[in-house]
Length: 341
Image (cartoon, rainbow, N blue to C red):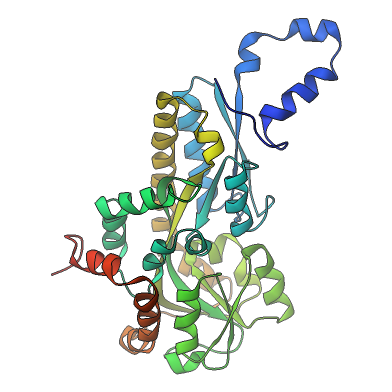
């Protein structure tokens, strides 16, 4: 396949270096098909038993099947290639081929995506998935591709819930004074400030240690992340607030993309959609099974939350969003056929 020159971490530049170090007989033994194989490096910040990893497994299986082994996927887990923002920047310069990331840092590159992070925007999983699979979701993917990134498919983290080491959270007032780790996302930070908390943005790979050392009191993430990242080991209280639906997105490097044929691009998109479906399936399963497991591991779980006071408390986040970016995308989501009448 024809892939244009890549930075030093990609196979395209490593291959000549490896050939130069080989003996002449070894060079003659190389077969042409072996030279044609391209490794696709995919990174994410979660563990190898996470829903992201399940998505990569499905992406790998489909892409390698469609390409007949011409494209081989190598997964890099647990932030080994950096935090989410650093990996997105890596895509832009071509040091990484593909990334699964939350939308937290995506707004720094594609401000329109901030609309998806507004609290209590979606009623349930069916509502959120319907919007992302609709024309609205495709248009947002197209917007991503205008910013030196390739939007391959919307994936999923799930509805976010609060944990901390101080007390049960039953009302917005219970957040007052707590240092809560958030994503690097101004909409999320505004929502927690409105509830009296002290939002502390940090990259996910730093979170476990920060909770362990008491740098922050708590954090907020979907059940799938809380469970598979072992946050129950360093957090005592879980409140099922479901305050934000958190999509994920699979992004590709434009440097890789520009070297693909139309057929190969089709393979990538089909494989990315297969990965997204596998991720959603795992999120759905853990959303029902994971809470019981976290409780069995010792977490105090508040299941019945009156969400009305939380919705009211976070309204300033909506004003911050609309003042900065307008209401077009918000209005379209609210008016879409996915929304309840």
